[in-house]
Amino acid sequence: MNPKIARLSATEKALEIIWELEKKYGDLMFYQAGGCCEGTQPQCFEKGGFYPRMNDAMIGTINGHEFWIDRDLFEYWQYSHFTLDVTDGFGPGGFSLETPLGKTFKVIYTLFTPEELKNLEPVKRSE
Image (cartoon, rainbow, N blue to C red; front, top):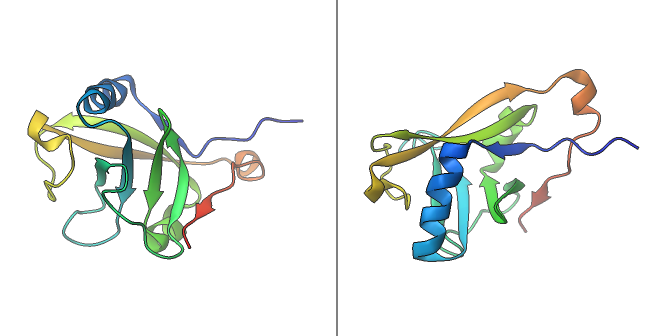
């Protein structure tokens, strides 16, 4: 049997920032909205610091921290692998925990192949 294909991964640079945030805040969560203000930038919060809306999608975890996506955004990007990365600078929202570090999380999207689409990890939907 083929192993399931992950929908989410993270770069080493992103993991370094996540480890730093874990030391300061403990359990984390990520949420990527589809609205105008945050520019679909992934936001990092303390776990429970943001509540996904009904039918939002949890596409995977990074270091055990859930990564949620707005339900409408997921419908558009469901055929893509998300790679969480980080860059220098301040994102448009500024509410994310990495902002005081002068960093901004970003996502790199890569389309799944037809073969990968047949064997993707399932998503969890909020109720």
